[in-house]
Length: 521
Image 1 (cartoon, rainbow, N blue to C red):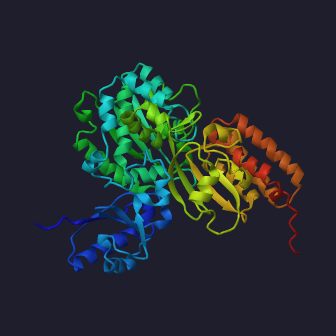
Image 2 (image 1 turned 90 degrees about the vertical axis):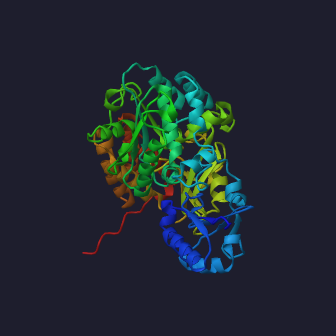
Image 3 (image 1 turned 180 degrees about the vertical axis):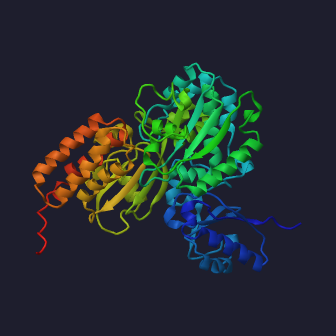
């Protein structure tokens, strides 16, 4: 009887593909065939240690052994060193689970990402998949809603609104048709958790949406995915077809009386579609402009029907909550921020990637301990948390805890959990200008404070950077920022002043510009 093939894991995650993972997988297949070795190449998701990609793992009796970063040219020497039996090599990292980056995390949402074959339902089930959905089917909709409320789960898209309260509103609404909509328009700078989840564990989001449908009485769902994620789109399309064929969703969810039909819709690249009402307009085939509230989408959402609109990470947390219990989830975190947060660390940082930790860890621990400080080796000057509309924090503010209320107290926000690091070479006046320019380009145009205010903001920043009547223009900048904050229809215009004012207040020296010299005649 021949021995079972050695399983070798090569990520199919877009980040790994961008640095040569496909060529590595092909090289491994070639070398194994040439040497007469029996191997099974599994294309898994990324573990999140992006500086080590492509990271290859070999399954052994002692656990999975990681090697990385592996280039195609390294593969022959890996085989020479006997890496199929965890042989020593300069790229050998050791047991994946024992790596410091992995050991320090609390992985609930991302527990399977990088571990399983993303499209294998058998693999998904073997690692705890469907358990939350099975338990949900034994409960009433109201009981599911109460469990989500008790867990303390809040929206992971940025606003931090309690998920259970939103679900209860839709549950209590009377309508023949209700919808579940997943906001996967992950447009914030420095964010990639949604993409990694779709590419590494797509059934988790499908399961979370099915649980939501059972809870509120919905039968149809849509995933609104940004068009810039072609790999995630292909993975989702295949996963939905497989889930339907396996009876996970469709006319009967796991053989129950509940029906749930799910589709993917691609956005056209508009940042404003991350705002839920603009997203709904786009889903309906209209121009993506913000709706006035009320009515709330929970009561009059997609096609005027009660609709649950949640972020990818919110839906993805639900199966774990239903499987392990609301209290087990609430035991993680601090204050009103319960559970775990997938943190995306990027920018000028030595070790960037995806980290999942309980709320409460400090920004300093994330950047300096796990991130290893700046890649340039220069001092940290500023850190932006929460995407392009998030505040800039100084090096002296890094001890703040990753918590909704703690950041709000500093006039900052958590957003989607993205962190972008800048060293001391950054020009903060130019960063403030970028915030206005971004808003001017991405505004839906419905309200004047956002549409016109952002354009005037760019012009004002240009005068400040040119050193033209700086004190007067800073006064205009503050007045304009107050107007946009108070009068914009949605968070697009309302939050644009947050990075601007934080840059101005924390780094005033960058705004104190001498007049530019006149050009020679």
